[in-house]
Length: 289
Picture 1: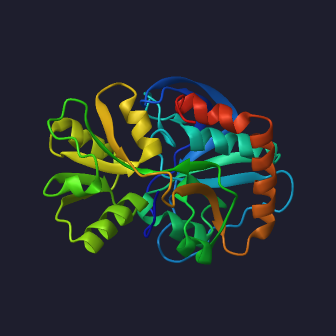
Picture 2: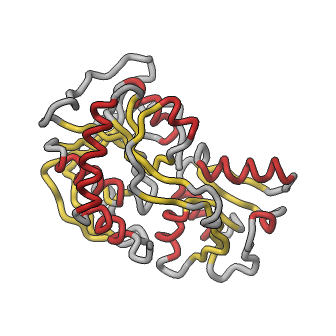
């Protein structure tokens, strides 16, 4: 999914976290959990490290950075304050398995990795694709979900591109600093393809403009696309082939924090073995194989 640069400054908010009961289209009812909290990243971008949290022993709080605005992975419920989604529930289940509380820190995508380096949080669970470049700079858990790039249009669109080449001269949107951004722009450069590209800070705004007719198509993660097509307004017209090198999402940690990485991998393996991980994923993506 995503990549970053600067950290938000704002008031700190605290709200009870849930174990979400969300629909894949972005609205749901959800339960509450008093074992976790959500706050906004309030650190100044001055290079000052945040106070360290002890994640090397049982107990304590696991601070998780995420951009809460990327359905169905992480987004706010209809009340505007309760975070729900796959990554939110995974964070809750993971910390519980590790014997820790959890704090979700809502962070702009354009600064999420910088915040991790500064120590604003212990890890990022926010649809982070595991890439060769990122592996040089960060520790990653084992992958917990696969992802593909795809094209989405309105269901009643007159033009439905069945390949990247068919995006020629169309108005196409995507979230900036993401693998969708890289994938499309690299393809355009290699194939001399002319596309009217439109980069957005949040994927929610991309789909807003697609629905309003300001865009002809969207290039995005297949996981995101599945949640948007569920209500019938949109349609996936092309998806990256399984024979291509596909993306996998992992939990991102500071380089050298192998002790936390080992604990996270052990907890993740347990959630996979006992069916919790599949249950979380299929709750939001019931058609996912």
